[in-house]
Image 1: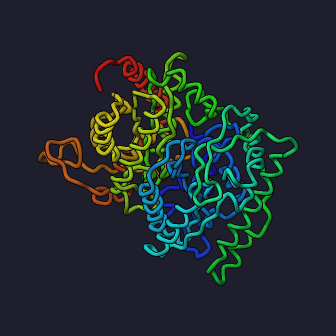
Image 2: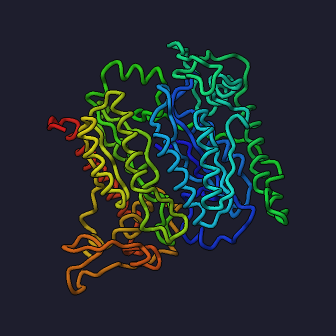
Image 3: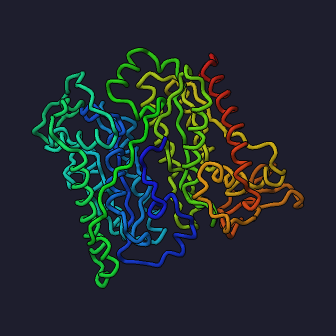
Length: 515
């Protein structure tokens, strides 16, 4: 379900452990790259996730061969500004601004002093400029902005690059553009900001080679990133040598197959057909919510985001073909303030998380969905999600559910009750689904409490609890026994849990209880 997001383990932020961040030598030339990808219809006859499908392969090509100590690519933000009917899952300006500043704070805390906002959306140009200045002023973070227009890939309806974007998008997605099916809705186009509710449709022009355009854009991006790495960094010549060396060449991976249940994989025509048929009214929309936070020395910080993908895929495989279930874009970032003392953690505020979920719900409601299920893989999100879902039920009339991933019944009691982070459960699931990301030699066992401890006060699951930071309870970041994990257990737990989740979703779809 994550499609083409940056997955090179050498340079992906989500693939590193907190110890990797803590032990990386300080470097004035090191940069973090935060992609900003909108979701929507650009009038090009391609799937709604076009921006991500183009930008992520270009980023991978641009950073290929660079020392991993010098560059790190963050998970893309897809809930950005979406001011028009052609935009999907956009958030309000205050929330979009907060998202950028809160991610920037996590980047700064991880020791980076340079952040690149790589924006593919024409509607987020001003947002990126505003946030870049505020990050510089509030954190001292040197913040840079690269827009699609700087790569010859401007998606603005009035821009000259739309045919180029259409050609590269068709090549990277492996699908031809659909023929136009509706008129544009634009007015006051000579004025700023103008009105661009529906971009004018663009029939596919012949003769443009998407592969050549991709190579040119990747080379341009690499050059710009090299300039940024060298900016304000006298004496960094050795570190900059890799940037000045041409990349080995653009090698586009085979386009990922479109998921039959992913809303972002639909084209505007397909979405219009779905909504016109009234299909969403009897369907369930699922939003996976995760986090990017430390998971001990043996697991990457992206565990909870990965688990959202793992459980979504496993759940989808268990659903009957006729089940009316759709997946909205996942929310990869969550409320992780308890892990703030461990570098690599990216935490949203309570307000930002709530507003991001509200934006998802409003979009789904506008499309006609009346059932929303949140598949949450990070415990720190649970309280905010629960009261926000209650609010959504009341204000939007959506029937909502918070899906809890079933915990294995055969876990030892100590692990089941006090092994709630980076222990046997999560480590086993990663060993089953993404074994290359588990560093078993670093696995450890550390519990925040013992079953036979005196009294009843505990950090969780007790008559009296106390608010805690991970550093209050654990030196390693682990709260559980990661040494007891196994791929065999993970596979069994994943299969059994997916079946139970499928049963819950099917039951929820057939529920007639009032919202």
